[in-house]
Image (cartoon, rainbow, N blue to C red; front, side):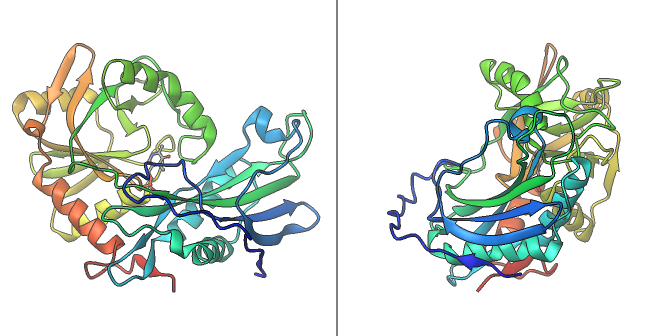
Length: 354
Ligand SMILES: *Cc1c(COP(=O)(O)O)cnc(C)c1O
């Protein structure tokens, strides 16, 4: 793929690495590529970061035909930039594209575009402990047309945003609200796709949970309203009586790359891992029996997020006495060790860019 590069003449000052937060600061450049039915994907380019112009009738604004991805670049102590399983993001992007009638992006093209734009802005990868460069690829439908149909034209972009350490004061367990009113997705819907509409559907429940002092929502299935699905932007795992249990991918759950990695490592370490339906009442029972040993979320942003409190109706289940469990900690240490290049990577997941 030919990628033209136009460098900024006004490089911005790099931010203070102790005050990055998430998703508010952007680097000097971004990737863009257009699609039309006649030309296919064309005009791949890296340009200075800035506003773009679109017709107000662009389809994405009206019917939400869009998909996004999320991954990170990590700078190790050796100064090298690394990605984590970017081929998985490329594959998942195309699953989302397929569901949303967006044209496929060849996987090697997707990964090459990510590498190229990170390479141009590699000085923006922060190096303070726990910090990284968040990478946000996305595709939007750009036909200027109010009819309901798949667009003929699209824009694929990649933005880069230096992001702070997720945990400022260690791995603090979070409180999770098991949602029994709203649902996020149903089988046959778009739950497995990374698309804005799923997040639009989630906001009302998230606001409610926040108002009650819970940081995230745990969704139940949309039909029987009793099987565990996933957390806001994380998959969920339970350690029950020594066995690692997580909801199976049923079409309404996002197939997380961290989820896949955790399953792989747990099996490698000799745990029994069950991907299956989990009834919320089974959790209540395990909690009552004292066999609910650990609960944690998995996702690119937090890696491993220990859950210390689960609210369901009038019941509040406190897990792990406010501390991260040993398996959660080991998973966190191993995954982040591989991502930053501090540990040997026996799985071939880490991809060095330079
Ligand atoms: C992105 C995402 C995840 C986590 O996926 P990772 O690939 O592990 O980052 C989980 N759930 C939802 C809804 C997501 O959008």
